[in-house]
Image 1: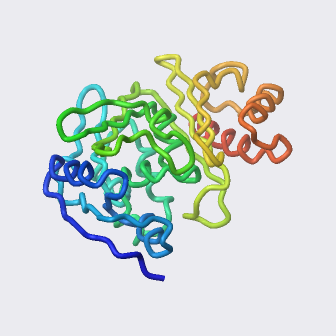
Image 2: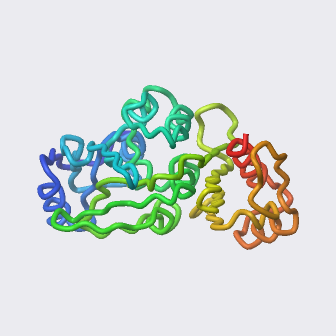
Length: 276
């Protein structure tokens, strides 16, 4: 199939992009890598009146590291992260996750911001960034606001963006030097979307043990204190055993099948990575 007729505009700056969005409320779509939007256009699942190319906007590819954390522009490609253009010594998990997304041709075009705004529950970036307590920097061209990423996703394929707003960047707070991260996804073939996924941040210095279950058919399940699933913050090299009763309660509360336990398995393996 071919997409329905639409106009096309290439925005040169944030102000120009949000002006176009404001002039066509609800009927304009932004495009960067187009790895998700392109097929949706062809299948006519979306029929925008105008498509706004935001890739030429410098602010959306800006990457900055400071003492507090790392800011990644929304149009940064997955391959840029995989290849080390986005670097933080304490966050090697970013490159590892990027390398497991789809295929190289997709990673060359697909952007981290596009993945987040598409909000596919089976995607890789949302659970990992939720575990890292990342924030979304949202702009309307005049001012910005910060939204915790676990609140930015409102539901499956739905995010909290107003009509004339764009995701400008993602900010990841700097973990302590000894912090460890893990991510594991269950999928039929390497690179595919996850059937279940787990992400873990273990930061003993700050007494933080945060875990996330992804691919839940909705928002990721964020467990602020994952120690309750293991009885305590585990020590490095410990075998990972999830507390059965606490895990069953978590799965039931999220509407996930207890008997399948594939999400619990993904989380346990992510925890084992973090503690290795």
